[in-house]
Length: 424
Ligand SMILES: C[S@@+](CC[C@H](N)C(=O)[O-])C[C@H]1O[C@@H](n2cnc3c(N)ncnc32)[C@H](O)[C@@H]1O
Image 1 (cartoon, rainbow, N blue to C red):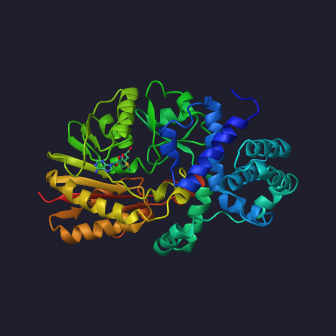
Image 2: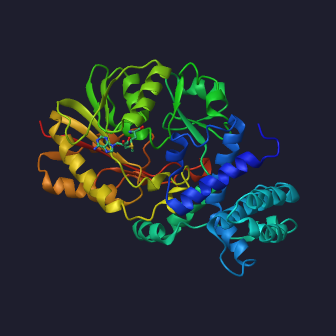
């Protein structure tokens, strides 16, 4: 391990450049192995630095703006952003941070001549930077995303969602067995939906019960769709877009005969790993949902979507994306929904969900489906669970989960969930 602390900072700078310059997502880069050369604690440090910088980017840029006469290269700007985050948000010893970023830039051939600028600008924050940081407003989502969301949910809820996104997310676990016992064992909070929430979990793989497969990581909101589907032991169930497998595990855990389909062979590896670790069984199939054949009692369709509900855990999304891909996702969801209905036995049920905050990927999708399918009804009874709050219910009969719900507990991912029933 590199004792100077340069290695995780160099990786953080690379990741930030890739996200803000190339539109790459953090999860894709991690999956492709960019962190593999680092020791586990260095990996966590690099990732944590990038996440904090993305969450605080608006504040960091406001602070830097006063001291930059012209815009530097992206790499220098990102080194300055990381430095501001370390000094002002994380309150780390200023001179060590300044020296590290000066060193990193001086080793970078294209930008070495700007090491003096990095030194001069970051030094300005070492005395009163943290105080100035605290006085700035909560960072907002970029306009391309904020505008449609504010139109859908109103200005106040958007501001509340931004508070939750800035705070970051706790870790939620879905227990394989008794939830209350797991909460007690790990010192976590038992949530009304049955998930267990940990505030300061540390390394996930080092937690009690990881090796023995006593739980899996799944945001509390992401665990709701399978609870609404309520698969029964022995029931023939299809998880149409299953990887990495959180919902497959939930359904396998109650004894349903689950077929877990996904188009991505790479992502299906995670389904296999998760099933094996938790000692659960499902039939894992690589294939296209639009070509799959068969008949099932119940189907869960967790469709590909904008993932705009997950920004508190994936703050890279607003910087890596620009909304240009939304329309093709909405079209894909529509054809997937129609296809899924053809795979249901008469009287069967389909739970549709997306981790999106855009009504076009949720409520509107279902209103349009109902208009073109007289054979389908919304099953509102499926939603009658003791922990479903009235505020979550949406007019067409689904559930709208938002990051600002449970704000005092640490929020939840944004999700849309509905249960549809095919006429018998
Ligand atoms: C939101 S994720 C599913 C998350 C998963 N249900 C879980 O709970 O862990 C959407 C998934 O859809 C898959 N996908 C995208 N297009 C597909 C298609 N045409 N057929 C099957 N799967 C597809 C992606 O590979 C991705 O794994």
